[in-house]
Image (cartoon, rainbow, N blue to C red; front, top):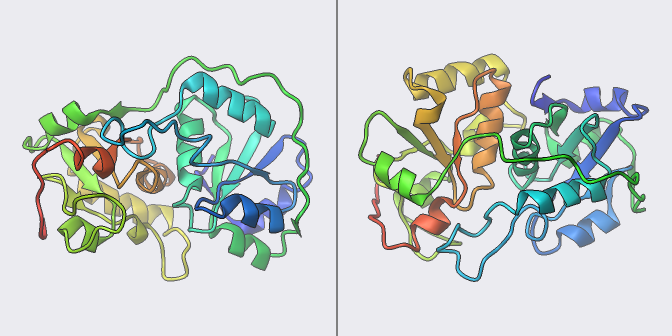
Length: 280
């Protein structure tokens, strides 16, 4: 199954009994936007409260650390998701906040049938998918059976060890200005992890905000990886959310998903680690 689903394909799935639509829009007014307007039948998931387990200090795990896996299983139950569900998730940021994060988390517990909607909410509306302001109760299901996160992740110490080692590729998917240290609108310090290369997640998209064709993504990332094994490729962003957009693109290209550094720049920059600026 492709990692990306086009709006025209979603239209054909409307009557699928196992379909679960998830609205993963993020930001301070995300829930209010969902309540006012969403794809018909979609359930809302909250990045801040349900897809993260924030700690008192972002130096410990960054701004969006993963929740306890049992808590995530309960979230899935509240959304009506079971192992047989056909899940399609969307947002209004071309998958970056936070549809790709939800996709990655589902894949990381072993769920097979999950896709991100190409073009997001606007593209589905343009294609004629019905919308609603009504919140439909999800199906009552048991907690999702989970054991552990199954996709690779790395921690602060592992990234620090990989930083000077050319065997590893550390990809920073933030926009170029943040990578170069010219601006930092969210975290405390500007710059990047020494040795990291900048491949902004926005370069996964065409000018209209849709994902590039799978073959183009494959050529792009095979060139970037330079024959490294997936375990030697570490992907991060500001807080482990938009990095999942690049992991999604890699999966859509038919390549094995590399490791996610969940803590990302928000953790690194708060731990007195070496900081680089300028171009790579």
